[in-house]
Length: 212
Length: 212
DNA sequence: TCTCATAATGAGGTATCTCTCATTACCTGA
DNA sequence: TCAGGTAATGAGAGATACCTCATTATGAGA
Image (tube, helix red, strand yellow):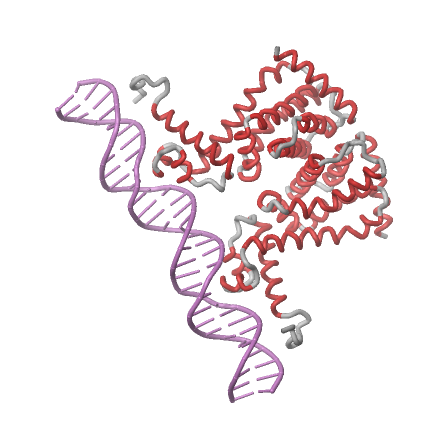
């Protein structure tokens, strides 16, 4: 019943490799043309597989969409978690997380563009993205750093600003947008413009040092 | 060549009435199921017309989408313009416009829901919605009420917050969301939380008086 | 009553998409 | 070499959508 042994030399099974080809093809196409704008046949063709092969790996299109979106948000969080989790101040985590998330989306435009489409076309992306945000905000509230009462509307607002930041950067705006989005987050959470700026600048210095 | 005379008793031509039936049907269906989620055949059926009749009034689907979205944003702006334009302070206009826009979207959910779909599925809605916003922000900047330098990213951020506010209210959040969105707008534009609150409350009193 | 421009009809051509399934290819251990 | 399980194929059934066009209906003035 269990897989007896891996075949030939492959470090990963053929099944896993084909699956990866499909998700990578889906990512490329969906980042370019959107989720609804990409058909299963196109994904299969991009992966150099026949149409029907797709359905040996995913029950339907929504399943690969979920897989791709989760993989992207996971990769983005992984890329920033070591520094982020080393910060003890909730406000610093918010400032760092926001900037870093936008920076990664801009550095890896395939990821950023997929996210933009997903915000419109795959509602569940919201939870994937806000998970880290909720934790950082809650930490800051606990520490008394934020005066704004935190509810779902605050989270929605922060997410909306994050989204606007990614969109701007993908449209060619400079890295300053990430820093501003981070300060806007802090202002929404109750800090004055000056205070938000101070916290953001201090956080950047600290994060720089943590990175080596 | 010109229309010689209106026929029968109608105050508006039959052509105009049929066109209106189509746009109203489109509004009802698209508010419910989205723009891409509504087919031309469904619109025609909802208007109690045959499939092909649609194309005697609109070149294609995108044309009726533009017409419906423009009609909705125009109606919303008309509904708040008399008070809004009577306010002389740019910051007050921002506070009033934001609250009022959200309030109208909540009071007329067909309009609000159409807007939500349009933000995802009809890019040109952005200009229709931000036109008033740009003017009010520019006025406030000119008057020295805002310290934040205003560029496209600020507008995108304000729009994103407006959108989050409408969405929350349509999901059942109370009227407080409109007030908070207005204050968030002012914070983004550089005001402290306390100052934003003060301006918003004062604006509401003033607007109340202007209304009678 | 008859004429004629305007209005409306709805079947159907073309295109695209999702998902199935009978068939074929591949590959490895015996 | 061969057997058997895994992997892959691609034609096509079934939906659904957009848009066209030859045809039919309507209704007001002559």
